[in-house]
Length: 460
Image (tube, rainbow, N blue to C red; front, top):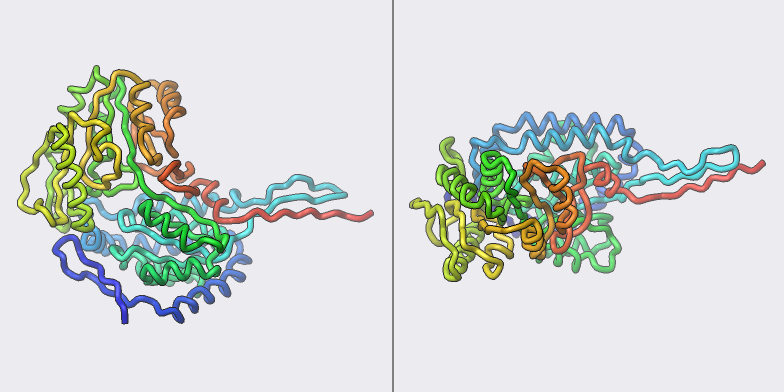
């Protein structure tokens, strides 16, 4: 029997191992989802909301165990307490707004005609979730899909196998009907077979660009809808009037929190020449305070990356940049940080340019480059010099100027004086190789339905 092994980045041990579903079991899972969906779609919004709130309560009650499991599974230090706040914020927003978001669009309601468009469920939704924010990214689709009347099959990343089981436990404890939500363990071949079967109505995938291309190939010809959140190389631009202390604190956190393994983490920084030196010194001083260590220890402020190959990719990016003239500001010495190790100390590079991979290729790790710019036009050109477009942050006191810069930047979300945050009321989307589709906001809820028109004529 084939199994999936979860190798812990903490010490390289096998933390969990689970059997892969057989073809028969996978088909039975889809059939249960299809059968359950018809009754679930007829369930009232109030009842769906009650069950989702009960699911949330059950999940939040597990948070202490979840926090420790996350450290073992993907390396986030226990001091940060899991993903409880974001999960609750997003879930409660979706529960509160789903019914209004999916209300019929009435065109005419007269004695002669009733014309309207309803939002009806897509059917069976497959969520392929990533390991870096394993609860938050999954909630983005699972809860709105269920509130919209779909059934959900969750295939979580092999690096975070236990997250899917926690979702299932919470759904079961809440009393969600059998077949409405199912957690599965699949290998790549079985996942592709399921996507190509024509039995899945929508798939939401969060992962790499190559992974997104593989999803599209597997689903080709089925006409199922897809939501793909893929790569990112999110920039920050610090203007001369920025509150420097605030900018330094938040940008450094945005670059290195979760060992830099954030979809919308800061991966490149552009600073106006008037404040460049002060910003660089402040970022250097703050980053030097990080403590790289075992994520199970409260003293550790940055833990290992999820896999050694991810850390070695960052090491290669840094080495290439140094060969081309970049200078390291931190150079943190730590016995855990060595080639082939999951442990990687944070680094800031200066004297960088866009001929270096670290400024154009996705890093997804604890490294960031800082470039000096002379004007907004220079910053905008550099921010757009990327195959990705998920978020961009602008640090200034001038709201109108920030909005104008945001209008010129090719991105899905524009921030002013903050970064690395998802607002559940705003749509989460991207452009270019970052992918397609939307999650969160009323648009994210509506995106998990299809429009159905009603043209009802009354005869005299």
